[in-house]
Image (tube, rainbow, N blue to C red):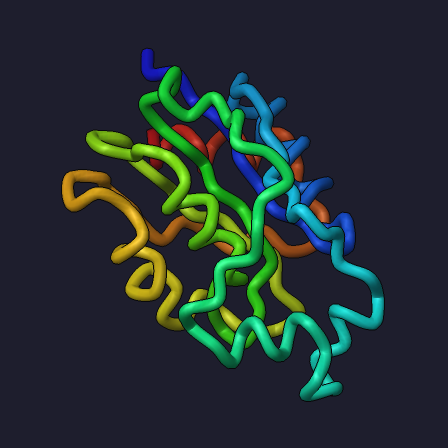
Length: 159
């Protein structure tokens, strides 16, 4: 049985809730990806072109600083990596996380929450941030209420 970690970034709490439920259903450990500077409500205002999230997402080379550098990635075979979808892709802090650690030989399965869009070009946008032999795959949008049974069934298909 592979060791699994659920790593997630959540700006508003929605993805955090899903990640906690997913970790429990999968029997996996949990790690929160935190920005060095937490996002405020104003930072997340996607309608304001000068908001922090808008500026970061406009610049594909943006790499928001992480609050820590002690994610236990090395101890796991599979990482279920969760985040909210921003502008049809993962927030650039996910690139920061992927570039901080060595994911060589690991399987990274993405999951996301979204107000309406799908994964878009998320895998393509994240692939350059990991080692060439890391397997990064599109997983599932986990919007709305999830049951432990449905989460467990999904995890069994990706592990």
